[in-house]
Length: 259
Image (cartoon, rainbow, N blue to C red; front, top):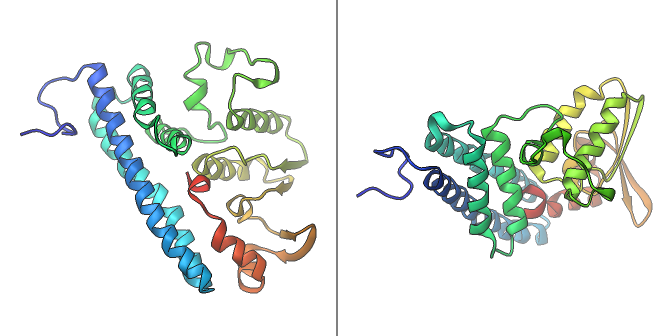
């Protein structure tokens, strides 16, 4: 008997059936990710309360790696399902629609949508500063699409990406990113920051952020607590010497930030 997720169908699949199979794979992977993440988080809480900083830091690292590990496996399965039709956007748009309906009742549906966006970037191998494929390519006029007054036809993350792109085009000597990555899912945030390193290599960059992951690679991090400077240094130095920074690292990483 063949299962509904058999990756080697005997006969060609219709667009709707192929989209349904891919969407089911994505939904199941997201469920597995959430369950494993919650398990690690529960363990991390106990370690944090016990002031086991080393264990808490390891838990934070495991949660970050978990996201990529689950998505890498899912990407391989989806690519096997799609086969020669891997680049057909009509099938992928149908997959997105089915997936969204499958997670619509989940209390974590927003995180689930970010999870699918990360999958899209892997399937279509989006590289560089342009992390926009999951919303620009879906627009009828693509990059010629109009933006409504105030950007009301774009999400917070989409507006942030477009604003960053406008800044990059100007090639300034100084960049100030004031909470400019907060609306991005973790995978987009990480890829965008990696791409920005090359674009801003000869400029001075200031980043104001609440996410540790956004500033972890900075040459110098200034830690604020109730408006007071309580630490200055890079990540490696602060994690060893600054209690407040260490507590933030141990406790901050949540499902919303990793997704």
